[in-house]
Image (cartoon, rainbow, N blue to C red; front, side, top):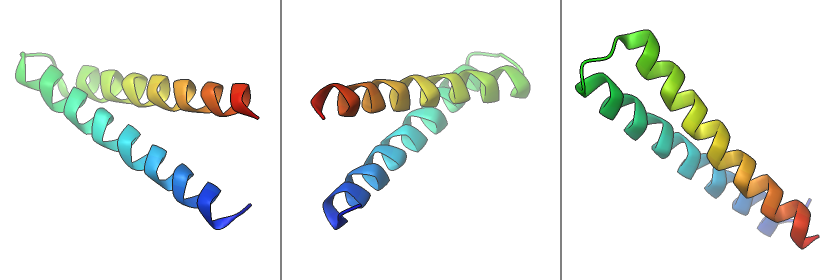
Length: 60
């Protein structure tokens, strides 16, 4: 892997982590339990990474 590819992957991971934390905090703030907030955040992060990896696969 080249340096550019590694940096792009780290950026995607960072964005997915930010999405997960934001979603988890938002869900927890609406009154849901901690477990539901964690699951929602993980699902949002998985969706973001899935979209990113699908775009990379389509590009290459």
